[in-house]
View 1 (cartoon, rainbow over the protein chains, first blue to last red):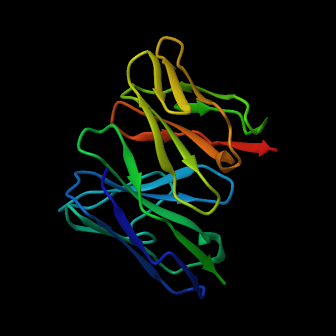
View 2 (cartoon, helix red, strand yellow):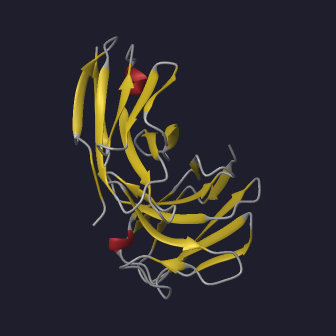
Length: 114
Length: 109
């Protein structure tokens, strides 16, 4: 399976600021996804990152708060804008393998907003 | 709506066998996945089932019954390092993964 390098692995940020999380895949992938995971809970899909077009956001998530870029088939970024303590969470990027039989993940970004 | 159900927590003894069940109701089906997630880490892939039956991979096996909307993950010869959360996920008709809340497995010596 492919490998996703995600950074930063963790950060502590001041409220009102923004943080950009990057994911680099070691091979070309069609679909990339961004998730949020609160402690002890399952994964919540934020959006699907589409190469060359605007991301597709899930209910409850908007582009102004979570702008996403996908300039090519191996790279994507998620920005958490105007952060508040409620944004403290783990953020994960994910992609499908070629056969669609495995979704693999970056290492995750543990974000704490103070 | 779409729904994945799995037990919140299970406890088992080192060396024993444990079965974690997952039932699902989704719009379409393109496969069921099991992932292991240790605290503070990203999920890691364990298994993928798209046809009915049992898939065995070392100490881990996964079973699927599409007609019943049911799967289980079977862990044999439990080790302390198997203490983790186990996530069940289904790929729906749009190839979007629908995730269960996860089952926290506690292994006792």
